[in-house]
Image (cartoon, rainbow, N blue to C red; front, side, top):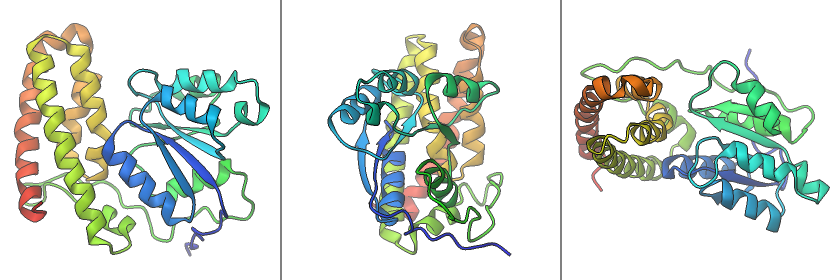
Length: 265
C-alpha cells in the first residue's frame, strides 16, 4: 500500500531555483511554496552564484543548460566560495537530457544529486527532502506515477498530471498553459530564424529549452521531434535539421491551436 507524503514536513526552509524557462520557474515555485517553503528564482548560473553569495539558502535546484553561465560552472564556483556554509550547500541538478555518464559529471562538479525533467511533485519532494537530510519522510508517492502516453489525433496533450499537481486550482493550470503557449511560440520563431542563418547549435539549444515543458504538458509526439533535434549530430544538421524543424512547427501549431481554444486568454 502506498504511503502518503507529508508535504508540510520540511519546516521553514529557503530554496533557490536556478532555471531559465518561464514554464519551469512557475511550476517549481508553485509546488515548493505549496510545501510552506520560501523560493527565490535565478534566471541563469551567474545569478545563482551571486544570490548564493549574498543570501542564505538551504538548497539549490540547479538547471544544467542556462545562458551566461551553465549549472555545472555555477556549481564549481559555489564550491570554491570562502564561506564553508555556502560552499557546502546541497545542490541538485535539474536536467531534461540525462545521458550515460552524466551522473559522474555532475558529482565531479560538486553536485549532490540530480532529478530528470519533467518531474512530478512526489519525485521533487523526495530529492529535496533527502538532500535536506530530513529523517523519517516517506518516499513513496500518494498515487502511482502515470507513464507518459503517446499523443493521438484525438488527444494532442494530457494535462491530468498537471491538474493533479494543481490541487484543483484551474487558475494555476490556465496560467501555466498561457506561459507554455508564449514560450513555444517565441521559441519556434527564434528556431526558424537560427535555422535560416544556419546556426544549428543554437537551434539545438532552443529545442532543448522546449523539451521539459513538452514533457510537463505530456505532448509525446512533439517531445519526440524535439529529442530528435537535440540529439542530431551537428555534422548531419544541414541535411536533416530543416525537415525536423518543419515537422516540429506543424505539430506544435496544431497543439497550440487546440490549447488556445481550450484555454482562451
